[in-house]
Every structure is written in structure tokens, then in C-alpha cells.
Length: 132
Image 1 (cartoon, one colour):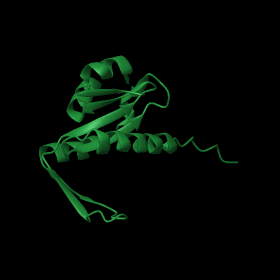
Image 2 (spheres, rainbow, N blue to C red):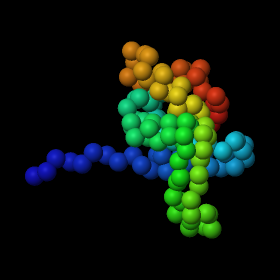
Image 3 (cartoon, rainbow, N blue to C red):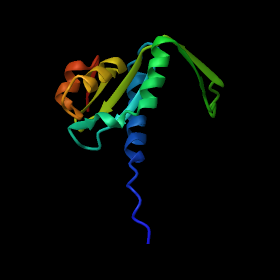
Image 4 (spheres, rainbow, N blue to C red):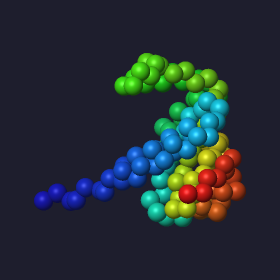
């Protein structure tokens, strides 16, 4: 008999994606990339939730450029070019979400003894905090 599969929590990020989309459409920001993470009802997000390849891609957008293929279901263009655009990690905690520059997130990860980012610390390093 096989062991049980790990629980998939993609629904949390999908729901957060809809919330973030509604918010950003009402509060436009400059062009950039936004990597969404959900703390799953906790007041901490493990640093490991942001994968190395996600950090690498964000740095590519931030410091060089990246051509991104878009599905184009609703008439969107086929490609979007982000050149030296800001890259953010957006974290949903139970009572707020924070928008953090990816460089600041990586600095926190690499310069703390903690294995996760608390909501209190996220509020300090965030460029924006949105109460829910």
C-alpha cells in the first residue's frame, strides 16, 4: 500500500489570487511581477515556500529582463516583456497581506536565525500592508 499523498493547498493561493486581483485593479501600481504566497491561516510563512527558481526568475525580471508567455484566453497579448521591473512577494496572513520586494524577502531569509517570516516582521519590511 502506498503512503497518503501530501495535502495540496493550491485552493488557498487561487482564492488569494482573486482577492489580490480585485485589490490591484482598484489600487493600480507600476508594472512589475507579483509572486503570491498564502500562510494558510498562520501568522508565519516558512521562507522555504518561495522556491529558488521563483527567486531566480524574480531577480531576472528585476535586474535584466524576462519575456513571459501569456495564455491569452481573454484577448491578452501572447507575450509580456518585463525589463528591470520591480519583483514582489505578496504574502497573505490571516488579517492582512503584505507586498515585499523580493530582494528584501531574500535578505530577511538569509540574515535571520528564524525559518519563517512572521506577520509582524513582514509588516516592517513590506512596501505596503493591506488589512483584510
